[in-house]
Image (tube, rainbow, N blue to C red; front, side, top):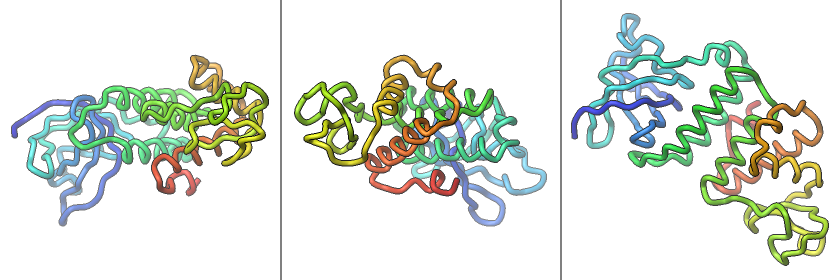
Length: 235
């Protein structure tokens, strides 16, 4: 145990005692960290508003047995444009929730950290109807649940694909169909997200197809996590 420096993104917080707060972060080098920020709820706290959800911060922490202690926190980015737009706040909270679910305490996952940071930076620039769904698809792939999209996952047929079921591993033909129905246009859009066309996919305007891809991403991630996503369904 001892002092360490890292940078992280605040996922959530909750009160501890009269003046302290437990802060849960995903960090670049230490995975998910649960730490106490002492006195942070006091008006004259030296941390100010730096340790709020969505904030990207530089940290100095003291490692403890169960909870670390934040001894210094400096803001790198507070994502002001996100915070000032309720729709973008909702998008950010959905991504923070799923990262909180998959990140492991004290196990570094640099790709997950960089994915979340990149998504928040993209959201700061502009809102896209496919940003959160694309994040979900990329997260599933990172988690080892990359779906089969070019042929039927059960029989191998490269004919018409009409359904999708993540528990089976991806797209399904008419003979093997189960799970959710899926249109050819939605499958093509998921392929673009996962196979190098993310930038063009994020430029897509909202449509029936983007809403289908979004619903499919949420359903698939909930299957993978085996839980309902609160932030998504509160939108």
